[in-house]
Image (cartoon, rainbow, N blue to C red; front, side):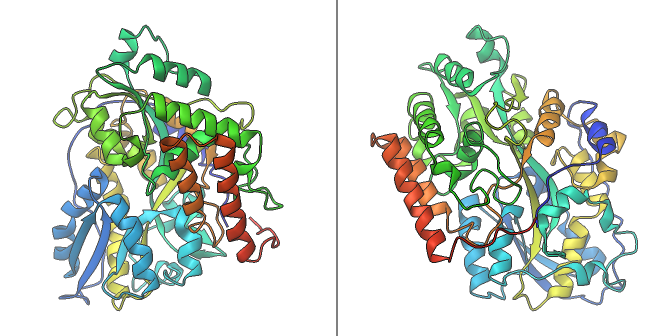
Length: 457
């Protein structure tokens, strides 16, 4: 089961001790595969579109095919499409999917449905895994999010952190001399930064993605309880988000922030909408995953590349140690795949030291999971200014339970997402919305047979 994220101090200090500008360059991975026993095989990989890391991985497919003889049908789809499609494919035992990327928070649902296999037999098989692969080089505390019951269900390719992107030019024009220190100050800033020319604040507001950023915000109002259910449940299965007075405190804040300082149409905003608005100078502050930093700092794509800084909100007293979302991202194998050995060759290739180092050097991933890459001087030099300080705080105050690590984690999204949407789009009393959210969650848990013994971490 999931353990608290605690990277080795030497690795964390080394990656966070410097900052610099992105540089480009790629060295083809020195991947030691067997002598093309899978020559002529075609496998399908699915991942997200519009993400620099996955665009970069796609560019490596010719090198992978040349090395192994395996052709890859590399499909990139919007976030909402992938998040809906993959669970359905796993449930249907769709043999047309072999490898996919998604967040480690989905491990309970995938394992519970039997949709993903244990990768340990592949990792430990010397005939299928190169001698220099060195699985132990992947930061153990990060990889732990991909493991359950002693089995490994995904390989962590990076560890993401949710942070605040902010426009320093807009801050200066508004007379703001520092990033916000408290939730109340962030709200005040957002209102001051809301003008006819730009909104003050942006997050994902659409039901399909709204949980991601709302989770980060409620971590400023809800006490963290444990690494399995985080800020969702205590060990007696009480739904913490629906417990008063903190439920209404969060709901009132969330409604005020999104109804009064966000772009029009925020209830349908996806991550791409906030990204585009921020890039074009239509938003002053944006809270989201660090994975979009390359796109924000690319002057060919962004009008604010030289005016952007990064910040992690300090943890408030109610949740002093675990208020920052940390979401390890993994690469997985479909249990229904008929080409598992070839699929493992691709998973192995995309998680080698060489591939991760190349992605870091090209500025396509900021937080690689391999310790040797984190400590590589050349890789360290590509980190953008102010990001190291933000990441230092994030990794020191982590909450990795974006969804509770129980089989019912995914079904709980609907009543929570419905309530979040109602906070944005209606004037229904906050307490009523939060009570309805709690009733929906409680009903799901009751039908699943809770209260049950609390899982051991």
